Image 1 (cartoon, rainbow, N blue to C red):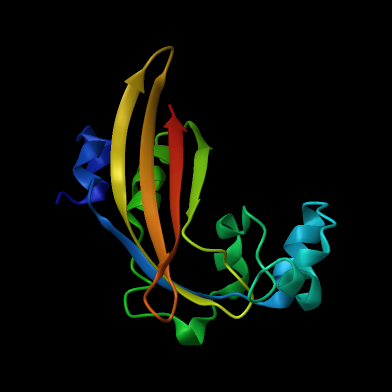
Image 2 (tube, rainbow, N blue to C red):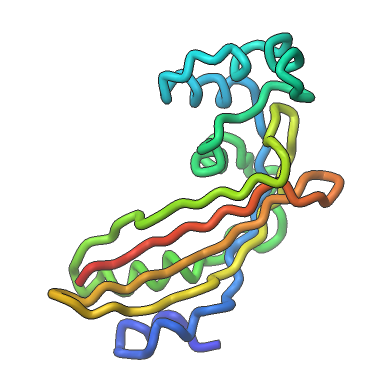
Length: 170
């Protein structure tokens, strides 16, 4: 694979397709899950009360559907991170190189595929890779980078597939 630092010198950004994203471990806790639901103005008690969650058929308090976007900010404690968690992200390296030439970075899309609900008490391990990178020409050059992250629980069962698209508009 080509070093992403070369991309800003005119190399095709598709050279990072298949590159591995840094792994992570995330603990799902009640406080952040409830606070996230409150921030979304979702008053459903299933996100706040274990009894409501149980009555609704959940094993524990579930995380709101878009929690996958924010959970690393609240539950990735340094002492539980796997080897390689601190390696540079090829997605962020490419975006950084493009930004050094100016322009604008946009969060293009976030997609979640739930294989089961994320619930309080889960500890999830994230692994991922770059699945696509491409350039579109129009009034300006736009570079799209798509990353896919798989979250597995402690039983190694797939819980969540998350796809993130970032774009740089020159």
